[in-house]
Amino acid sequence: MKPRIILSAALATVLATAVRAQTGATDQAATTARAIAPSLVRVEYTLQYDKGQIPRGIAWVEKCPNCGQVHGNNLEDFVREERPMQTAGFLLAPRLVVTEDIQMNSRFIKEINVRFGNQLIPAKFQSYAKENNAVILELNEAFTSAKPMVFDRDAKPPYFTVTYIFENGSWQIGVKPFGGLVAAPELESPFLSGPPAGAVVDGSGKGVGFCFDGELSVDGSWKGSPLQWPAVSAGELQTLFGKLEKTSAQALMRVSLSFRSPKTTPLIRYSMEQDPEESKTERNVVGALVGETKILLLAHLKPKTTARLQRILVYPPEGEPVPAKFFCTLKDYGALVATLETPLRGALEVSGEGILRSRHTLLLSSDVDLQGEKRVAYQQH
Figure 1 (tube, rainbow, N blue to C red):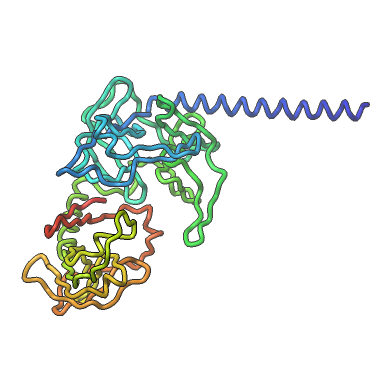
Figure 2 (tube, rainbow, N blue to C red):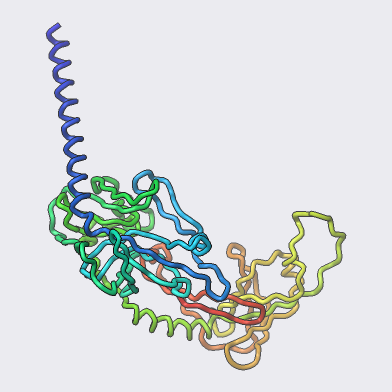
């Protein structure tokens, strides 16, 4: 009987200790949430159509740090329903806010506002982080009651992650212990798992660092205020866009493809196998100049369609069109390679850096579209 009584008492003691620890952790999380609440703001993007086009980009989705599910909306929904796209922001200084980079061309953004309580203040992009998926917004004026975060990169653990999301009809602060999972990708350096978009703070709510892509380096270099991150200013980004526009005009051009008429075959009504694109005799595609006499045609053609290809004409930004000859089809990339009869300048330079190693780096892109025979290009990041 005594051993059984002793064992029961020991189990009761362990359970009581666990309950106290859990209660203590919950109280600490609640204290942290209250401490950082005055620094949490909401960033509101009012989107718009541009030249009849809906806002481009992937649908606005984010992984919920609380339930683990993915929430989001189609970008057009925000325009059609006349409501802003909202995301969390963190006040770093009286007029500076850090928030995740939505990576959208500015032509689709009508205005930016930042909200705290009932106060709504216009804002603009100040800078873009080079190696974090984040931007710094500059407010037109300071909030009357919000308080900027206090940072201490040398603060002692334990740390907590703080997120601020709209869920179940209201904005919610999420606080949970930081750390635990270390991932070691095959082709990259190990990293600590962090929030998809949130702050890392100590128990008193002081900022230790931020994470906007779910990954943090294991060496602790992520610690510190976003105001110390390497960044590109809004003005510098526009200068880079100007340079990219010149590069794009020289290297990404319209290419016309002419085909022999396909053999006539009986049409089967409602057949799902018929492809109108495959029966065309003229097509305009984007070509990327990859060498003085080599051009990559961004066209995924079936073998029987490629067999009908008669003529290729490349339209440089200046001068007459340049004829080219079919060279090969890329097996895995849905593109053709053609050889120019006359060399052209301005070929793209290929980076030797693997794309996976650049996925957290601020990169520029040229969105080239063909509207009939008209080439239209927009530069973005």
